[in-house]
Image (spheres, rainbow, N blue to C red):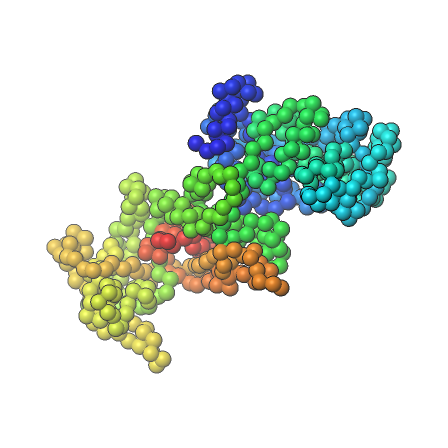
Length: 543
């Protein structure tokens, strides 16, 4: 049990909120969700489920300049893909009328005023935490003047940036958020839901707690950077005399070799360093999905990481481990050769084609088997042959035996090279008595390798991904450099591979998750066509 669950269980024991639990996930629709959001989604929806409560989805759409319905749609898709469904869908913009009335209420009670200072003057006047700020020269305007100006702000009389509405709290508070925070700013911008109805928009600190209150949220769970905002969250609820949810903070997710800033991710997309928000190298949920991570593996990752009170950095290998653990259970096995060299079985009949029975998933007996054609000429991985092998190399070499998976034991007799000294053909003989069910099928050899039939295999495009950033902390840059300079130039390699002929477009896209035997886990990419399948490498077989 984590500390948030302990708080909730104590509240239930005391009968607080009628022993009900109501959480919410409140993303701003200004970008695509990433793995850090996935942790918050799993936490908020998971707590609601555990305590038979409700979890709302509320879009914090208070900044029309940065928000778009594209992001709204992607967020909903990501949450549902992760396996969750919200109790109700809301938007902060649903509450603009009520928030405006509450702002007028604070003005009428002398707790808010219109400030004509510039943003620079306001920031300078706030001072520093160790010394009091300077009161605005407009702080003591009359209630009537403030009400008149605020209504004229709403009516669109003033240009952007000319005036703001500020709460009147304490310019000497050591908490900088208490030094007369801005409640409203003027923005003549079209909102994706309300159109041009409004030209003033509430700030996060004014909208968030009241939105929680309107929805009857009991526990407002957010990341640690909002801890210093909590006193202001409480102040607005108390000043307005409305339902007061409890804000609880937890440590946000930070991972090695990864950035979590939407602004920086947007830069990567706009400047072409990645191929969109769903690029499989991106930490976005849609990027992870396209890379081949399963929803269950991400949920397991969030549970394994747990909930902490202080920030820490999680090694990205833990996420990869969770993917590997789940994919091992669900991925369909197939034999694919990525770096081929031709293997010719000299004593195998020229026109004979056999069908070898291959297991689809040894972890799932119900997955059944499939037929793979076997013939005289095969592709094997170049790394599975070594001309001058030492005793530690157990795979194929001259005068050495290996088993071809699901097929026969072969022995290398000689090789053929081109003028540059590259091996072009490996010649072998096979023992026909070593196929499964034959007299010598149990004869032991030190290695088993996979293969693909030259004549019948299909060529596919295979995208091999590495970490997007070459260093554990991409934001830690030398002077004069940015996180862009820490990008890994080897984060994507594209090559052809030879896959089993039974893999049609329909079958590949239906199965999606594959283990290329001995090579790793792969995902059938939406770019696939009937002419050429495309696979993304998710993770290797081992760390």
